Image 1 (cartoon, helix red, strand yellow):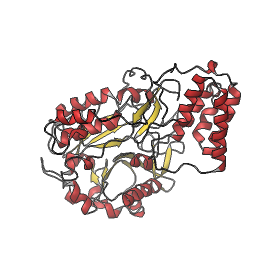
Image 2: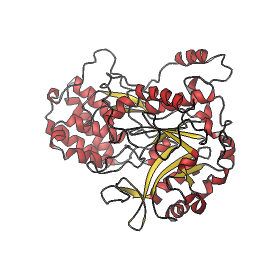
Image 3: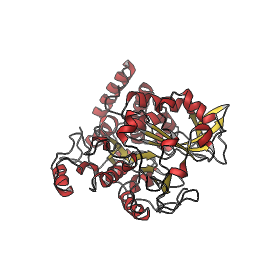
Image 4: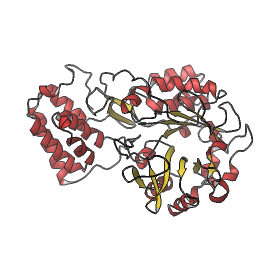
Length: 452
């Protein structure tokens, strides 16, 4: 733990405060990047403005090394990595107290399980850092466990879950892999599927075409990661939302090839009558019906077993109008509710500010607009970025309302006399010992136009 709120803490220095020449420090950071196999650091290093300010590179190292993975992920155990860390320690000893402390935070400081050290403005490291949540509470561990219908749960969802894209043509909406997202508690994945290079790829593109510089990965690679997660976690349920540009038959083939058919929730068991509830979550788990797949293309339900999204899911976005494809928000015909909260142009700084209090505010607004229904899926860009609780906290709030009427699933305690009493008990618990507190980030940027 490195506590920067304690005695003698001063504001982070500018690059001019570093006694060691910038060039030497930059070289050390590149050595560290080599040892850790961090190509993103090299991408930043190609920018002369960033190269001249090595603390930005140090922040890039921190982001590359602390991406919200579980604490038990094994670190690289190579001689080169150990040697590079020794070099960094030697360099730190040559820095002033302010610069050295800051760089130690960036390279070695941790926020603890379920948290991530993040800076709220781009390029990385130019603004204050803070510990932000990456992982919602598991609603199955609350008072109700898995005993409620599936539509009484809310799940953190990532928009354009495939993180890779062209910085100019198709910027990414997430910062880590689908496998990492699943480890961090994401249970809803939004993926754009295209026919590309004789196969199905997940891609960011335009007009129904996947292009070489916007392609993320073959669908089979991502779906095999999903299968590995479901196999290793037999009590987890995942939903996939497909923006579907693939030819008939190709998606069902790739899901089968990935071994996911064994987890498939049958379309004929999905609720079809207004007000009808889903099976109990525990029954879905017991039957191994742990993968829900929805497509944006009508007509694939009968031939491929892909459920047509708008027959089962009602959509509200950040301003709470409905999409043309979706039925009215207050329609009881759809038993699940998806809330989108992201912009048409992915922005890390916007997400950082707006994934916090504005998201919680919109959660309440859309609840009223959707006939007093809380969303089952909360979809965001850059789910790991916020000024605190972020999208994981919003998911906890929705689950609290769905499970016991409290404003957080953490307050749905067995034998608790009231939400207030449970909240007071939670408030008395000491904060995690590994937390890092830094100055707050910038005010939220104005919202750009909303994506549909």
